[in-house]
Image (tube, rainbow, N blue to C red):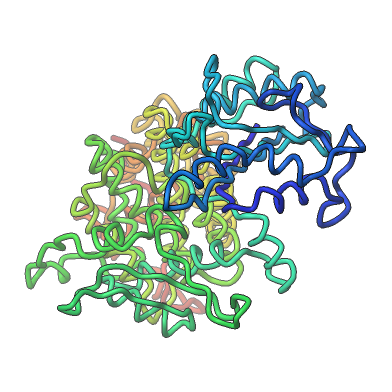
Length: 563
């Protein structure tokens, strides 16, 4: 059950005309009052043919008129409007049930606390099976204003209890970090202009896409302007940036002026202070040799940045920072990924945006490595090779799974659900990215003797999951990759242990595929293995000496002694 509080100005009569009218699309049927203050004395135009909307409006506004006549400053914001809607799959509630629900809502909001005879005047109008509208005038009978601070939170809590008591669909408790739902006016405007998203939704996607491209808030605003988005910056006398608002091209008001939305109204984490904390949080100065010692491509650097993701969640403030940066890295990857993977990755990034924010304050400095990796990716001019991208997406998938588990452990229901949605799309992208690699590897299966030796390595390195790995349809491809890795100087037993340590395999549907993705990342820089290197040189020499062959050695390495 959703209750959306909407302050509606001062026109009580105008709102009543909508509630008792046919609706914008003829969806209102049988409008009538199901609950209200002093029901016996209240005129109901839906049930009494002699009652009028003007009479009802005057009745509700009476305390407002009395107060305005006694005080010089008139109240002009006294109309309180709260639609309360059941879920589509919920049963149809009776008028009596809606009456009880309305009374609980106004009591929780502070409009009409239980047992308060001097509370505000209010009514609940029903004109459809699945919802009611509560209208109140926010001046009490004693002339005071009600205490409505945090009323939305209290009403939300009341709705969660109502769902339980009436056997309705149970929604997750809010935590004040969600974006504001589009208003009816915004949705109607988007529909009228042929837009798939409302302006605030569209702007949120564009700002999140721009974040990996900027190192400061000033750079971010400049990037948005270059992308065609209208930006209005608020500055102090010194020229310092104090705030900003953004507007969608073509979103004009009735006077033909650009409509602007403040960053905090677009999304809670897109306020200027929060953006500055993320973008400008003390990035440590790199040592001159730091880049020289890093992996060669942005894609490899990003995968490496994710390697320590599990341990980075040990401290809550660091965990929140890394999860926020994970969303930026996912967005950056989606922007630079090949076309056939972009849709799944963009959908994953959009879903994960809700998992990026919680009530826990982030220590943004802790996530500078991952944030730098995201910036490196969006600024690179070369695309990834297939294996590097597959390894990165697999690492993103694993990091997203860990982030979801962290949110679950903290009781962050909305964030955990968002992470699960993102994982669904990341899984699809990971499978698509790995498929070409699997095809190539399966065509280069090593000899049976080599596969038996490698199977022995699997059982020694990961005994608990060995049977699942060896019966996985992708085991022949994994064997080919292990043989290649050994030829390049790795010890299969050791790199299997390292790859398994990066992600537990018990929850993996196809553990061999998980290991392949991890090994593609682990094995790019061979560790010294003199025996394997000598064998590789001998094999290469013998292969190139044979007539009719090229200069490439065979995929399978020579047999090595068992350990």
